[in-house]
Image 1 (tube, rainbow, N blue to C red):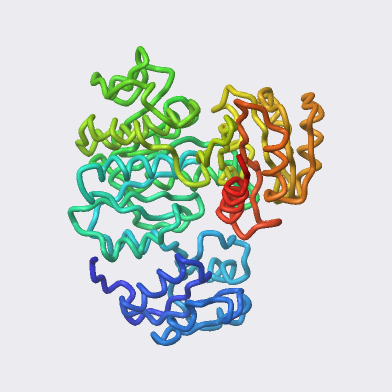
Image 2 (image 1 turned 30 degrees about the vertical axis):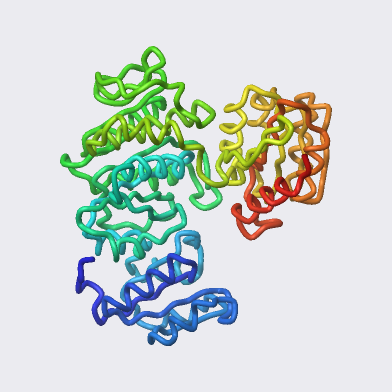
Length: 451
């Protein structure tokens, strides 16, 4: 890592003690900063708090007291999930203090080149594909970011000859200053997180920050299927590398005669891709662009595409029982993700859905429910989705308490050839600690079924 002096003897407030906050606090302390960490949870709910305290890091736990801002902090490091209407953050904005997220810290100390991947959907799959392709012949890539691994933890140990493959959320990108990936990827943009960003324009602006510091020496990989992204790409100073499932692109990745192409080069056959759905073909093309820019062989690319079955909780194949096929898509925390999952299957579907009510209307799901034979609903939104299911003529609609109750009922109602799909279209926090927790309980319930 680069041992920078930018934070030496500076008073820094880290707001939010999730994994990225803990990583940021430790790094800042190592860089010589005078660190205070604030979190709304009490001390005894954070096993890591003792370690921070023993290092000499000041902790303010149990709330976000506005009085804390009476101290003269020079910079704020904000957990990405904390909204900007938090009282401490509002005060920091009023005082014109710099507010960054942990990925900015990681960039500042990193000796490695960075690939940054963002988008409404497909981030995790694309990030993981790129990472696995780069590592076919060695430990060239390190995973980091929104995929669940604090970027600064990775940047500390990354060698100069390695690459950090970093998934980036709009929340993280709102807190960058100098962050500059050598290759930036924008998988797509749809409407999402408006409860946080307040407008679609603000959401798009946050996503586009991934390329704002790039230069003509860098690359911006963009989904050419979306006309909006074609226009937005004009903002970038980087070399534009497009990908498309519908158009032949001489300077990017595309499909021709059922072949995966990059520029004029044949990479391999499309039918080798194991991931279901056209959206995953887009993710594959984005990953091919990055791999070819980094001189990976076609053999390495096809090795991964022929074996990669998806990431945990994102249309993840769990198991087959008596020709019933169980898929865990708990990471579908919005309507669009569930639409994508439903489009990926031609077989009859038993859909398990529902969760936290954030005020969304579910009518956009209607065109995608044509293959849904049975729908099993739970959580705060179950009555809203029930109404949509009735309107499209689904005859078998069942309301249950939770995912654990939904799984055996789905198996009982299933027929050979059915897809049993957990794709909630909602966040999990009404009943579960995270989408991972929800997905793991789905998997556990499936494993408990008898053949």
